Length: 232
Image (cartoon, rainbow, N blue to C red; front, side, top):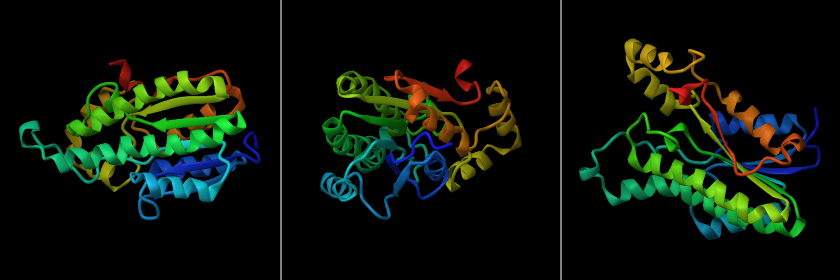
């Protein structure tokens, strides 16, 4: 299918896992996809972000996928450093803000745009990793989505969000899964209605829906793609 033919998409965080799957899915749908990750552009830096977007030109689709736990594990709040907090907020929330600001200018000028942000189930509940800044940033992305849908809707731009459940998508999530041990893994699976963890392609298909013509009247929504974990 080529429902996105001739559209230009930017997908952030494409070095691995979910970002790679999203880029592949959008290409299969006909879009011209520009992937970017932190090794090529520092999207937490406003100037670098603006220069990157200016180099691309017109953008129809933005997928804010960059983020993660930045190599952190749980630290008690009374021991948490400013740098640890800021690094997670910058990787997740600042990048989303910078990219959305840059893309929205182009989209408003053309009267069309599709923005999708990859949040997390941690933003709707609690983080399984116990990383306070991660849960905070992911919840903020959901609120940002609602506000921007309200603001940008009159300009022909839809803004939506996906809150993935546990997805094996990179070395960090694999290490997290392994750390649970067999008993912990079974305990987590019992909290998921489908009794299985997700794959990057599950999230990519949700993105493809949000940016497709079929979702032209869908905006301000956060879709949990988590096998039913959020039911419990």
